[in-house]
Length: 284
Ligand code: NAP
Image 1 (tube, rainbow, N blue to C red):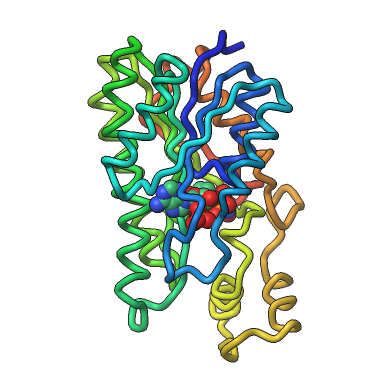
Image 2: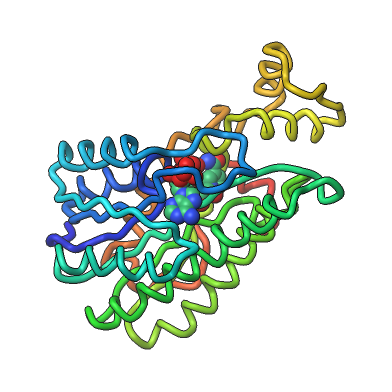
């Protein structure tokens, strides 16, 4: 059990962040959940999370027996991140664990992509996560140690057709994680990466993603996807080795809770995957 330790989770309004917030509450943590809870990038073609989504995470955390603090910030803005962490310290007295998980994902070929598609992914996924670490690390040091878990992706371990900005941002996070592990180990802070596979969240089920699946199969989508093209794209997704098409966010969360635990105190500087077996297709 956690003895009331405090976790700050970014991207907490839904998806992996929400499932992990509930899992931490079930493990006895007090939970601060941060999200932009608004449109993060006009270059994405899926619906943004809302203030209601973040409030719903709070209800679920409280139903699981956890104390909850909602925090709203855009992680591109380091002053706002600092303010959000200060709210959590005011409320809970400090921070023990940081799950730096917020992110976005868009698709377009390099030859066609907009400037925003590239910059928003690098600015939110890579620079925004670095902002969270730079704000959080001194707070963990004040606490005498702690845990940082960063959400990367299998796409941070291989190239992605029409997904260069996302792959570059998620690969960059591996470099950030390893460098931070080297620098923060002396303070009793571990830093690791979570590698989710194909997880059933709004970030992966949208038009641009389906068009990318069709292109990966060597075909050309026809503008706005018809219902049958969308269904075909779903069908083209390979079944994962464990026999499922998707991994649920709830199947990722326990790995994060483990990495935050006392049992993981000698675990740092590396990556942990929950991919339904897709990891077996990736070198190392
Ligand atoms: P999700 O449901 O879209 O959750 C991500 C959350 O992060 C959203 O609520 C999002 O808000 C928030 N966010 C985006 N930009 C932000 C910013 N600048 N500041 C603060 N919060 C921001 O997606 P998810 O699938 O749970 O993704 C969580 C993490 O897992 C992401 O880093 C993603 O790249 C990674 N991941 C996901 C998969 C997958 O298959 N789903 C696989 C590998 C890795 P908006 O909705 O307003 O943008």
